[in-house]
Image 1 (cartoon, rainbow, N blue to C red):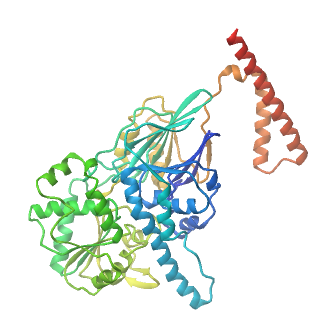
Image 2 (cartoon, rainbow, N blue to C red):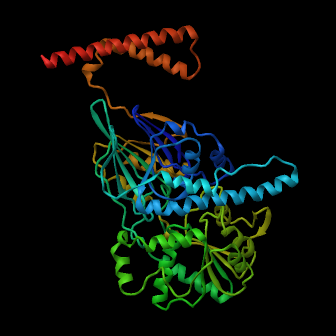
Image 3 (cartoon, rainbow, N blue to C red):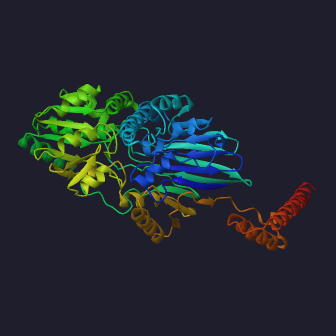
Length: 526
C-alpha cells in the first residue's frame, strides 16, 4: 500500500491524494489548481495515472480546489463512484457546471484575443456540460456511517466544520492481515462558525494527512469581526460608494449574510441594498435553506425567532448577466457580494474593473487569498492590476477581515492533531504554502509527533510490516540486493542483462517466501 500526493503538496490548491492498496485504487479529492500561472498549468496536463484504473473518489467537500477536476477525470476515463456527503453532492450540482461554464467563458475571451494575434486557440479543461454529466457518478453518504467500499477498505465521513457538508475522512485498510487507519483532515473548520457545527476530533490513526492553510498564522479578528464589518459598511455608506465583497459562493457568502443579519437585528448599520451577484451563490444559498437539519443549535434557534439570515428583506439577487451588468452603471450606495472569493474568475472581476479605481468604494476581503491570485495582488498593495487585459488603478480602500476564515488557524490545527493517541506514526502536512506547511510541521514535530511535508507527486509506502517469521534473517541480504537494484531501475541505471537477472532473483525470492509461509501454515495446522 502506498499514498501518492498528486496535489496540494507544498501548495494550497489542487487537493488530490492517491491511495493504492494493490487491490483497490482511490483518490481522496480531485481538485482544481488555483493561483500562479505555473500552478494553474497543472490543470491542463495529463493525469499522472490512468483515470480508468481508479475505483473510487472520496470527496471531502465541494470547494473547487477539492472537487474541480472531477469532471476532467471522468472525461478521461474514470468509471467508478464519487462518494460524498449529501450536502456536498447538492453543492457540487451547482459548483461543477458553473466551474465548467467559467472555463468556457474565460477560454472564449482569450481565444478572441489569440485569433486577432494569429495565435493557436485553446480548449477549456472541461465544459459546463461535462460538469453536469459528472454528477451521474456521485453517491451520497451520511455523516458517522462506517461503510465498506471494497473488500479491503472501510470509510467513515465526520463533520469537518469547514463548510456545509465538509468532511474528515477515516479510512481503514486491511493488508498483510493487519488493519491500517489513515485519516484525511480535508479542510478543518474554524470554531463557532454560522450554520455549521464545530470540527470533529478523531482519537486514533496510524497516519494523518493534514491541511496547513493557516499553519503559520493566528486569526486576528475572531472576536471583533462583526464590529469590523459594521465599520466597513458605515464608512462606505458615508462616502456614497459600493462595498465590494469577494466571497466564495458556498459558505463565505452565507456567513456574511449571517453577520449582516446580526447587525440589522441590532439596528447597527444603515439600510443599503444588498446584492448577491453570483448565480452559484444564489443557488448555494438555496441549498443552505434546504439543509437545516445539519445546522448548529444557535442558527436553529435564530430561525425559530423569525430572524432567518438568508431571508432578509433587503437581499436582491442577480441571476442574469444583464442584471449583473446593470450594477456596473449603478452609482448609488450598495453592498455587492460576488464570486469567486480569490477574484480569479467570475463576475467579481467585472465589479473590480468598474470600482477599483473609485476612491469612494471599498473592497473588503473576508477569505484567504492564495499566492498568485488577483485577490492576493490587490491585498498586497499593488497600485495597478490587470483585469481582462486592462490596467486598472487601485484607488478604492482595501480592507481585510481575517476572522471570517472557514479554516482553523495555527493553534486550532495543533489542538486538533494533539487529540490523537500516542500510537500515531506520522503526519503528512499538505494544503499549505511552503512556509505555512513547514512551520506547522516544525511545531507538530516539536510536540513529539513525527511529521513531514511531502513533495508533489511523491509516493510513500504505508505497507504494514510483515510478521517476522515471513521474512527470516536468511533473506535479508537478498532483499537488500533486490531493493538496491530496484532503485537503480528507477534512476535508469540498470542494463537489460542486469534487469533480466533481477527478474530471476525476484521470482526465486518469491518462491522462497511462499515456501516459508507454507511451512508455517502446515506447522500451525498440525
